[in-house]
Image (cartoon, one colour):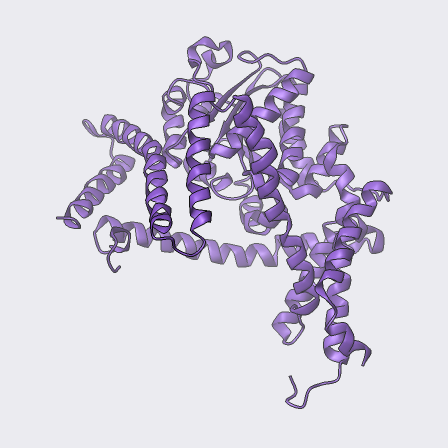
Length: 206
Length: 276
């Protein structure tokens, strides 16, 4: 029953939601409202489950004194401390806001900003015109970079024009193909989940 | 020999030069001209066309790691909305975006003398993902659990009396650095309801969003820091994005120079015996 029940629930609710999209019959519209509320409430609870799951995982590392267990301990303390601080002070609380503005935001921005340094070294060491495809990519990247900064137009007025064309014509054509593929894949996966053919999310093999 | 040495240059020299390229323009501005692109002007015109007093919804769908690029964009868009007398409902599809929206909203409202509850309301972040958006179409109050970000009932705000469902707002303005963001709004709200959707995103997301811009599903898109700089000039409020453009110019020029030098070195160096 550990697998059959979730498959049955997925099928029933998935089928009802899809059916309600096309047929407005009897109690279906009201049922969808109830299901939406259930989904919103369970979404909120999922956060708490996530925190408990992470605590168990890292608590296991601490209990077994696994390598770098101090990081796990630090993570558990910070996560729960910030959670209770948020509950106590709400998001408008002074300490909560101070930590978010002065610790979390600069920290995460720094991590993001460091990508620039990796891009610089890889531009110099790895991005080589070894093949025709790589050369096209390299020239395209250089033009878009120059076209996207004011200095590009100062060097040559056509840089922004060519950059815009690259983004709007060849890039759009390629991205459309990728997007159509992605959405067809998502649709297929959704149908497979509803029909119980896809079981990877239940912990077994798909 | 020279190119062989150049190929093995210490990476810290490359890092140091990048820092110099980024920092120098902050002290010695180059003042390079910033031309206004058609895409940016389109966003500006869309905002200008909304009649004063009309409500719009601004969704702060970005995370704290992107504040350097997104905060100036959100500030510029909200500033224009307030300037034009639009009523703004702030919202976020993510918990971090809600905190960032509160900071920008309250700061600007203080400076521009806008009142909470009549000129703007912050719904905050409501867990539930796309179901919340879908629910907004039927009943916005219900989707927001009938309270704003701070738990105050929506019934206590004059602004919310005429906004009962999402179609009561004139446009959805999204500031996003990924998912959830524009695509969720398009799929669940603006597409089915035929509502205008525009806003801005980080530079790295622009190629992925271009098909939606070209098809008109996104009515307008500010493209990264450059787009924000152009927007700041259009609303005559030059800010952080305008001052960052010289740094962006030098750093982009530096990266292109690295590309050229790296490839020159690769082709002109002494080839190893195995021909690699």
